[in-house]
Length: 51
Figure 1 (cartoon, rainbow, N blue to C red):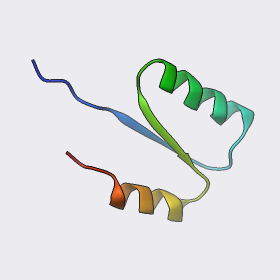
Figure 2 (figure 1 turned 180 degrees about the vertical axis):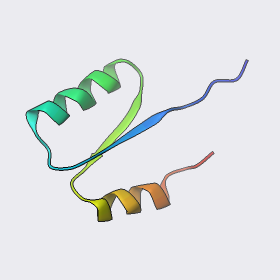
Figure 3 (figure 1 turned 135 degrees about the vertical axis):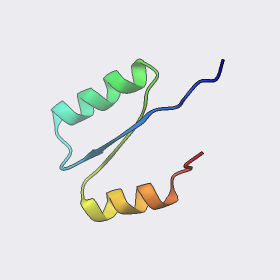
Figure 4 (figure 1 turned 45 degrees about the vertical axis):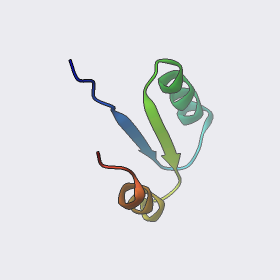
């Protein structure tokens, strides 16, 4: 059986709420990343491994 990696990208200013969400996602085994702007998000998406 194959497994899929699901990554979540959070875009916006860092707050205690978004920091908490990232910690919860990481603790649950999900890949997550947080960036402050759309420009940063585009860079992450362009450089992330799409396999």
